Each structure stands twice: as C-alpha cells, then as structure tokens.
Length: 218
Ligand SMILES: Nc1nc2c(c(=O)[nH]1)N[C@H]1C(S)=C(S)[C@@H](COP(=O)(O)O)O[C@H]1N2
Ligand SMILES: [Mo]
Image (cartoon, rainbow, N blue to C red; front, top):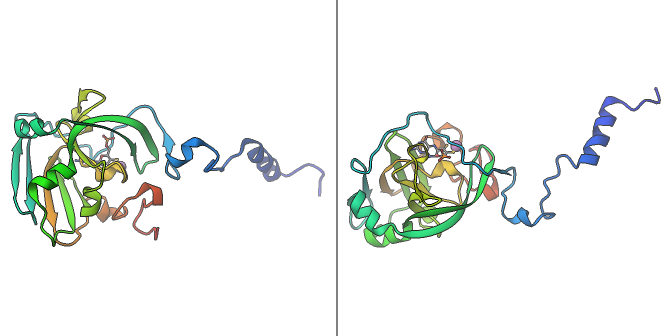
C-alpha cells in the first residue's frame, strides 16, 4: 500500500471538514421550521402541468358539491366579500424548496365549512381546478387551521401563473395539495386519488414526515 491516502479517504476528510450530509437538525433555530430534506428559497417558483388557464375574475366561479348540507356556487363578488382574512404561512414543495412568511388574503376553510356544513359521513375532499388538475385531501387536513382559499399574496392579487384568481392553500402539506385555479370542492365519502396521488406521490403529503412518495411507509 502506498502512503498516499486514497481518493476516497481524501474525499471523506473533506466532507468531515465541510460537514457535508449533516442535516443540521437541532443545531439551528431553523430546524423546527424547515422540514427534512428541504431548503429555503426567497423567490416563488412556478410548477404545474404546463396548461395555464386564463381565468378572469368575471369568469371565475367556485362550486361546492357532494356530502354537504348546503351546496354553493359563488362568483367573484360573493367570494371576495367574505375572503378578507390575512394570514402568514410557509410553503413546502416536494421538489425540496420551502418559502417562509408568505402573506395571504383569503377565506379560511373553517369559515367555508361553517357555511356548507359537511355531512357526518364526509371523510375527504377532492379539489378540482380549471386546468383539469385534481388533488385529494382528508377532510381533517382541509379543515386544519391555516387552510385557506386565497386570492392575494404579498399584498397583490395572485398572478395567473400562481393560480389566480383563487387557489387553495394547505400550508401544512406539500404544495401539490394546494390546487391553483380552484373551481370545485367536492366533499366525498371515502378517498379517491388525485393527479399526483395516482402517479406515485403520497396520499397525504406531510412534509414533516417526509411523505413524498406513495411507497414511503412514513
Ligand atoms: N390547478 C393546478 N394546481 C396545482 C398544480 C397544477 O398543475 N394545477 N400543481 C401543483 C404542484 S405539483 C405544485 S408544486 C404547486 C406549485 O404552485 P406554484 O406554481 O404556485 O409554486 O401547485 C400545485 N397546484
Ligand atoms: Mo409539485
């Protein structure tokens, strides 16, 4: 054997110096806030199926259907009159970016639920969008504190690329659950997978449990 350290040994020494692969969990104040495997960004990336429907406020309507005491069909005026709550939350995308402290204006889902009165047998919701996208959620996640139907971000109307005029926001789950260009909320008895949930993504998508893919047992 030569006295020269192998290439691997040198690499490993360098990694030790750099602290490579350390998650830093527990070492930073941030560790409580940044889910595992995520990194922080300051911009807001755009991700979708690539079909960006142009939905004007005039054309936009929201239907609430299924296992509810009262179905609804709201237009922009009806929605906007109610959607005046301001909130701040973080976003976590399964592609590993997280963005902190987003300022939203919209309607808390809890207020929508007061209005439509989900029936006792309702267990899930399916969110339908103007581009044909669908995503499913347990009712408990849809009803969770922080869940909203939002129309403004950082004091400006949501841009078309981010799902304006109105998108769902479920900040405690990966962002694929936050349907852009929201068109219909269907209350369901039982679970039906949505677009990504049929394509290998986790049924629930909790970033804190790193529920990225459906073959994760997490
Ligand atoms: N209607 C609709 N909503 C959607 C999507 C989509 O393709 N269509 N993509 C989802 C995915 S995979 C992600 S990561 C987020 C991205 O939202 P953003 O483009 O505003 O960052 O939107 C989610 N909501
Ligand atoms: Mo995504």
